[in-house]
Length: 531
Image (cartoon, rainbow, N blue to C red; front, side, top):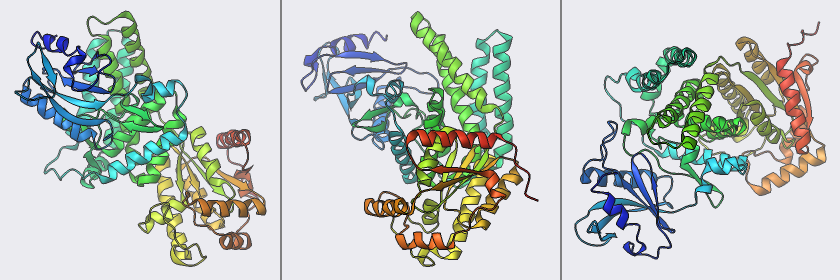
């Protein structure tokens, strides 16, 4: 510890050094900060260090980065980040705040309990889909409100995206002697180079389209806290602009990867689907595998470097080594070739298609695309906006329905080409619409399934009335629309029945049984066409 700082930290352990009641003072330490916990508030002081990627060696720099931390983190966590306060007085008798020349600066935050961190909540199995969906919508809204990075003349996309990814391997490889470990890292490095080359044009296009924005930059489970049932991201990167001015999908990949690394692949795809549904960025999903591997390798490197730090206790060293192994295994799994699938729903409005599709996406590790949402997006409407649902009117004309299914087909193609199953949630009452998605699956060489969902007429009417009264769903279907669907819908053909799984919306056990049936269907070879 810096000899000039030690007296100050020691003195700040005295509750009398604060302008508010303090029950106790506890000191936490990271590689770049000290955090003083006082019960009601936490005070974060930057260490006077130069680590190459950051330089906090001057008081002026520490003040600047305290102000940057406040600015950046108040975007997502204004309830946590309160102020930058000077530490005044003397190093033997300091005062947090007060008048006079500053000795140091601290970021004042509302204190929270460590068990509320999302990785700890997840370990207690207390994170449900509602929390993750709400978080995904928050991040999508956050990204949409950020100004895009200004165009950079002569930008070298390889230098800005590939070079940092490759550098991770260059920092890790010298730390290993075992041939197997070196070979494993080299294989992931080779995949990284190949995947970047494959998508290089799209990486550049994303930059030009304004998809690079000033994001959080460090969106993993340890930097999200659950407050009053709401997931709140905090502790974004303030010290290195290049680590936060990133493609928004790189940020999405970080949290998605971390959920999967913590054994919750289901929630990873819940997060991805909810984010894409909220923001509509299906066109960029082909770059997601690259970013998933990159983020997993970064977390592996952090754990590896920590495991080699001197003075680490055996317990902490063991935890760091296990962290490295977990994240590098996730990276290797992402780097293996994956195969998508096309799954479409079929059924009348109110039959329970969306409920079943949401459970199916978590079970399959799939991306959900909804016609009700995409139809409104085409018209610049948010999902819950009310639009006329009269057949043949407003956004529900035959032409608009054709546009909607074309949009769904484009999104489905992007998802499957990225290596993920897609679930397309629509009524699919027209044979021609179903045939287009079947043809897509054939063209891409992936399995195809139809989830046919049934409910009694009484159940359909009851659900539509309840849904309309609640106003919490994107569907605009009315009883009149339902009657038209029943009159005009095309039944599944004998050939389509070979690809169909039949379901009645019911209890959780019934839904899980459906998921199992769909998974088995996707593993089966396609039945030959009818003679």
